[in-house]
Length: 121
Image: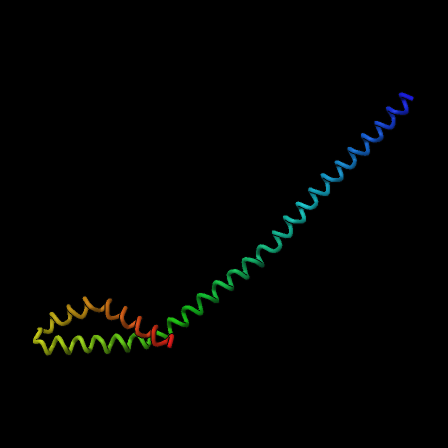
């Protein structure tokens, strides 16, 4: 009886070992499949993300290019008005040029604000 019990235990142990080996093999296979799927889909995902980012940048550039003529026209009008007012006040030409150069960033920012608010309406 004892020997039969020992044989059964050996078979059970062998079966358990085989089951554990199979589970471990399945886990390794599953990890390989996941790894290969990631390797296969990573370039496609990178391509899609790159395309989306490039498209959004192109849209932004197109919007900037469309607003540029408006900004330049607004800046020209504002700087012309500033120049006329400075000439009427009797300021000499070199000082007028310096003043316009100092005011140019503010005039461009104001022109951008005007064009953006006009585009939203």
